[in-house]
Amino acid sequence: MELLAQAASGADQIAFGEAISSGFAYGLAAIGPGIGIGYLVGQSVQAMARQPEAAGMVRTTMFLGIAFTEALALIGFVVFILLKFA
Image (cartoon, rainbow, N blue to C red; front, side, top):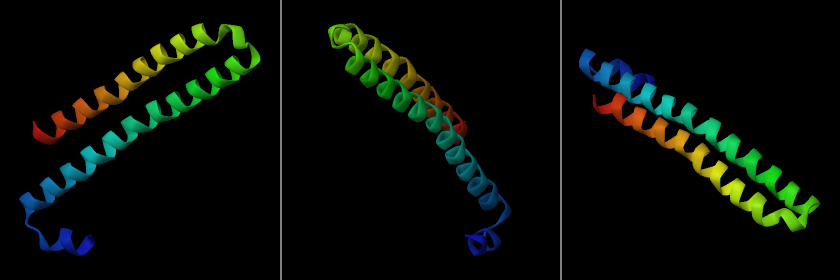
């Protein structure tokens, strides 16, 4: 990768840097929701195991939490696209 950066012109190096940084930014934006969804599902399964009679309410709340957490990843993807093409 270092040889490619040395052989490229100034404009190519800038484009290369933008691609790397925007991909890195989206990767960071995807880590948080991934951890959040994993924690949410784990806690929901634990709650359903402790109180099976409340499983329906816990499942509904879990899916709402997953939807809101996944929205963060989608916002990160939109910011990635804006950085890449703007």
